[in-house]
Image (tube, rainbow, N blue to C red; front, side):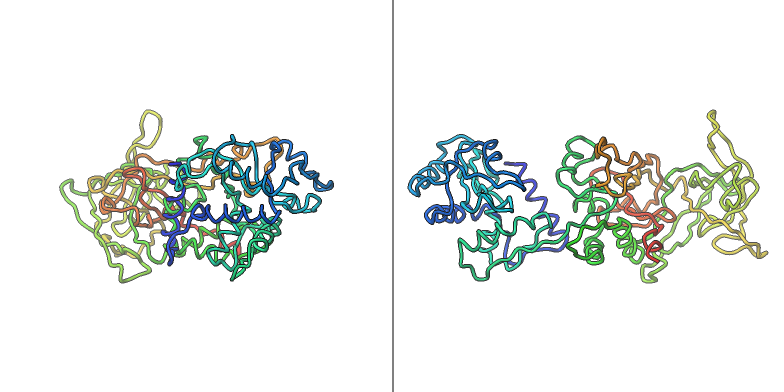
Length: 485
């Protein structure tokens, strides 16, 4: 099916992005359908498998419970010839879906429910994304998995901890169809659970199909394609996994560790740029209207080799709305009436007046500059506590900025209340959109592989789906490292 092939290609793309390029080519489980069928015939011939005609509900009833042994199927003792004939006819498409299954003949009294004559083949009349219409019977995972491992020479097959009870069936298949050299072994480890998100494909699919997310690559999703679109790098993800470690015990890893890994990397190598996310106009009243000048700003203060760039200064500027308050609280060191701040890398300005619109919102701020402070300290030695960023209104580009936060408001999704649904805990503020942001002109040439620090705001990347949109990768503030101290 086309949908199945899309998933396969998506997985391959994600793995290659991580750097996991296979040395010996790509293997598909369906490439071994012929061998799986031949092995199934051998199990029938060895009286270790039989065709069962119980319905799904009847099979469930015969299976028993953890505290009660199962009952043998009335079809368990069919002759070898009868089983071979029925299995051949199943393969030839003579029966509808659900009419029969092929079951391994093991032990209906086993305390492990997986060993109570598990189904290993089912009838399914559906086109396969690689095999087309060749097959109308398909091997089940617990049967096909060990066969594929054995044929590919896998020594250790690593699974998540929920497959621990399936290991005896894995070993039964290997032992009864071998010998194989090397003999594959299944080993389990705990799933990597991360706070404020969910790793279950079932829940993630629900979020996508219900329209809560902007596809599987929504930047809030914990999928590889989501993390990629968000701006995470392969190195940061690998470092996160290495630091979190492997365990057999259930654990919940703080998402702050993942953020720490990407922040640490980008702090070292991301170029700096100016973005005014929520702009308000600022006019320099004592600066000529026809004058412009440029100030040199470092591309990365942690890396001298990154060089510098020129940012144009003019009479009309934009600053962050939050950097101005008409009636500030104590210890507000940004722009207020009658006070001075430094325009980063440029002049010291003093607020002389401001104008509001009919709603009372600040519409424009009027300031004067100290023209002796262009890129340097004031000659009289006075101390200026506040520094804010800015952009020339005539030398910037328009953009949309999306700031992402935790997907869920609850730390551990396993703690949801009985009368609640998982979607009840979706963070309503998981994305904040600034539709009228202003950016440095140089960002007009940004690609979806370039990551930047927007000074004083955080780290950002150009979105791969929406034109002229930047996504937040991670904030500047590091809370995880402080918690560990």
